[in-house]
Amino acid sequence: MKIVVTVKQVPDPNSSLSLEADNSLSREKEVVLDPGDECGVEEALQLKEAHGGEVVLVSMGPERAKDAIRKGLSMGADRGILITDPQLAGADALLTARALAAAIKAEAADLVICSTESYDGSTGMVPPMLAELLGVPQLTFAKKVEVDGSTVKVHRQTADGYQVLEASTPALITVTAGIAEPRYASLKGIMAARSKEIKQVGFGDLGIERGESAETIQGVTNAETRKAGTVIEFDGTAVERIIQVLTEAKVV
Amino acid sequence: MAKVWVYAELNEGKLVPATLELMAKARELGDVEAIALGAGAKAAAATLGKHGAKVVHVNEDAAFDDYLAEPATGALAALHKQAAADLILFAFTTDSREVAGRFAARLGVGLISNAADLDAKDGRFVAKVPYFGGAKLASMKANSKPAIVLIRPKSFEASESGGTAEVKELSVSIEAGSKRAHVVQRVVEASEKVKLEEAKVVISGGRGMGGPDNFPLLEDLANALGGAVGASRAVVDAGWVPYSMQVGQTGKSVRPGVYIAVGISGAMQHTVGMKASKVIIAINKDAEAPIMKMADLGVVGDALKIVPALTAAVKAKKR
Image 1 (cartoon, each protein chain N blue to C red):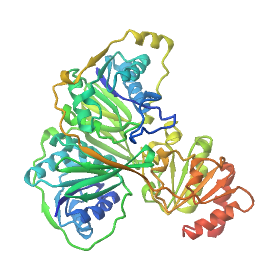
Image 2: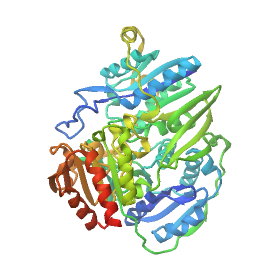
Image 3: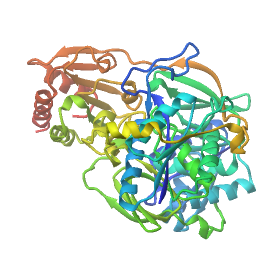
């Protein structure tokens, strides 16, 4: 079974975010493999361990996004593909999906695994677009994945429980953070990753059109902030104060 | 008047609240037609009419409920061929966003996702999209036609405007090729009594709860108040509680009457999902935590002592 995992390099969610002078998110400082994608890589590795096959990581980004791919390779993925080209800078979701689809089509994967949404952009739009462009069904918000021959079954997280979804491969799956605890790369894995292939693909290799961007940013404003209220210590009267607030809000 | 479509999401035959929130904004922006697919579509049409839809396109084929995203994508694409809209609105919910993504890719047009507001300006649509954890709002002009915009739940308040929609049967042939991602079973886990998004009181826990074993303390308080329990991303990622409880940028947006944040520092990733709550109460051992700067009432102390004391006081007051 051949599994493609889409991976993205994002600003480290555990460091404090900062903005550039033009109000765009700073993506220059500490960057890491998206933690959601780590879960996707882990799930792919577990499927490979159970069923055999190959795990290929595909990313789009600047050259340093190789580090994110390398991280996945050190966990145990087999090889990587980095789509990188100045022409793709600032790509919207559709262009990103088109570029990924072009690179993934050439791989003829049985399964494509994405995280439900990236930590930085959070639009959640690339996976369904990618599924459409690849012409495969999408099984989403998976908290559990089972593969039996050419049938793939997932437990899809819903607001009040889960759905059991089934489809034939090839298919695209999006996974939630809870699906699998990402393994730590072993020293051996880190050493092995150094010699694993990361193929670099340019815009011209993809055979796609740039198209018009979905949106033009006209400006940035500060969101309304709430005013600070009263801060009290937990003492003899604190609970009473809370009850008073709850009473005023008519919930008790 | 601009022609505005609203994708009406049905869950188990019922309109999801986010759809009616969209209607409140949609009717300000133009003539609204809603598209309701699957079981309950015809019944939903009456409600959609009361909320401002002039026309509701319905189709109750079981395929819309039995297969994920693809039949609905096909139906929207077919309708789009008959009569193109200027603007198509989807709720940024699990089900709707998947249809929106596939539909946009099929049309080959871009979209704007995760918006918190939308306005018309010189015949174009400008969405406000929160980023940087919700501290900043980017104004994005939609370039595509139709403009496709996904809006976060709880961005608008649903309200009836009176009226009756003309119900039109949407005749589409649902191709066998779109019946692929099959919903073979629906499992309801009994844990959630009051829906997080609909609760009047939400009590959310973060790392300050110390561990998953202490979450029942929050459930006791929620039960006493008739509310629901939420969580920060940190504890969901740590596996303490399921993803369905996550409040924030990635997760659910809530705007209850009272939001009680327990042991949550108030990272922007969390606050974007709850800052529209009417009253915020924060319980945290750190007086300098960001959440304290946005709470109407902040209580500094040990959550594991405060929460049980509060639960007891609520119960005593009720008696």
